[in-house]
Amino acid sequence: MNGLQILGTGRALPDHITTNDDLAKLVETNDEWIVSRTGIRERRFAREGESLTQFAVEAAQKALERAGLAPEDIGLCLMATVTPDCITPAQSCLVHQALHLPEDCPAFDLSAGCTGFLYAMETAAALLPRMSRPYALLIGGELLSRIVDMSDRSTCILFGDGVGAAVVKTTEDAPWFSKLGTRGEKDILWAPGPGNHPAWLHMSGQDVFKFALETVPKLARELLDQAGLDKDQVDWYVPHQANHRIVESVAKRLKVPLSKFYENIALYGNTSAGTIPIALDEMAEQGLLRGGQWIMCLGFGAGLTWGGALFQWQDKEEK
Ligand code: UT7
Image (cartoon, rainbow, N blue to C red):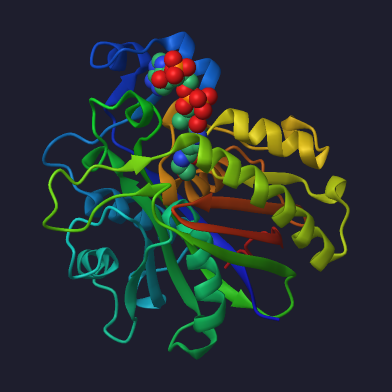
């Protein structure tokens, strides 16, 4: 079975912080409501003139550096996003251009909402063995502030901007268990295509909440079954950061202590395809990820899509 080894991670977020109190000046809301209903305290919004490309390139450069690899080593470049700078070419092509990736390194985008990074990992695991070089650059992230209606209190408090990246290679011996799914359903979480103005994101929050609790605990159990592991053998659960209450409910349903779930939603809100790679990068930086640990990433989002990966963290061999 082909699995992936994560060799290096990176992240890049706008430096401009918007607090709950800042949003309370725009819409009828307050810090207490937002913190108690979502766990979010602040988020980053890109300034006018900043682009997804610049954050994606910064995150990718850090991931390459930590992997000890150069752009010419990369054989596949994937970017998961729903807020590309252009409709065409793909966001990954803009990164390809900026990093001068080799011409025989294909680049394309994946649109799987907040599950995007898990879709990218699975695609890389399948495709990498057929590429010219064994390393892939995987990027997930958004400038959601570009499609969120800042006068809609049910969405503007939830989302933020940010990008995470990972450089991976395929391995045949490292354990890797994964599962992806889709429940085609537009009206719960969607944004209109080009030419439609305004292009705001629409969401039925309660339906997404329900979907997450229907799918994520079941997905976690299926991954554990695939691997023949007990829930307590997993060292870290890395959930999509959509709402602290969702994470709490998933932990409760799985009967896993909340302390095993990595959370940073208080600082960044929901950065969609960015949440999982940003979390992995923070965890790596804090020394939380050590060789031999079992990590389970769990995502859900627009599509509706869901997906998870359960793998053993491997320390990078020193060159
Ligand atoms: O990555 C996937 C993307 N999306 C998600 O994961 C979203 C998942 N869903 C959620 O996180 C939650 O459903 C929300 C945080 C969006 C909403 O929380 P909720 O507990 O489901 O609240 P609600 O929609 O049931 O609204 C409760 C009340 C309503 O007022 P009434 O009708 O009870 O008078 C809302 O109008 O809260 C009101 N409300 C607000 N009040 C203050 C809605 N948004 C706000 C707000 N501030 N920002």
